[in-house]
Length: 265
Image (spheres, rainbow, N blue to C red):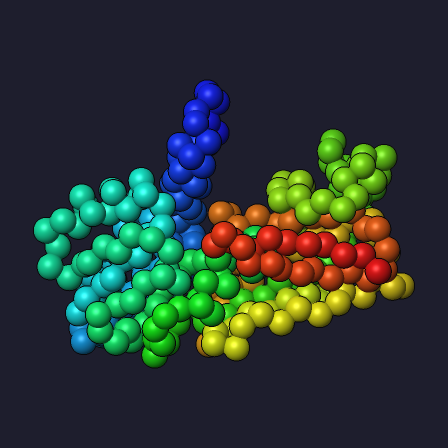
């Protein structure tokens, strides 16, 4: 979904973020797997805070199974919708604003979140490390960013060609190649675990053949894989042209999002 007409900057940004929320609901695999992982953790006496409630699909799921749900949403349009949808629901309280600014009026047993970006930490996971309250648990509680290499000559792709890829040097591009058959990661570039936070190392490609780097998100809870990029299609693979043998990513949290820096060595 894309906005095609001229709008004031604030309105454009608000709507663009809202459309991104709508696109999440096209990924039914992601929803099913998260619900399956959540189900054994939920009890009628729990108080749950949902970080990024969107349109309230998971809010409704949670409210049927727990004592109370605090549905937190930063986008003003989504929050307006949530307040209307749950205006008469006795178990749901909608809170508008960034989750790191929220101060719930009671202890929180569980934070449910879907703040992963395609590069693991490039959206809003960092917000969980800035909460003004201490939940007893977070779901999902961990994730990783794997890396691998492809030879573009074998892809037979009209875009990811050996003569085009060098023009993309330095850029991290989502969905550059629609399908990657038999992707085998060479290692893990970054890991995140609550409450410890993010750890990133350096990818070493020395001695490996290939000109196209592939990065794949893996979402886990308690060591168990819930989703991988492409398997849950709302999270795409990310690609970059190989410009050396070693690279790393750095994340700078600013304005409620983590900005990504790619560095080749």
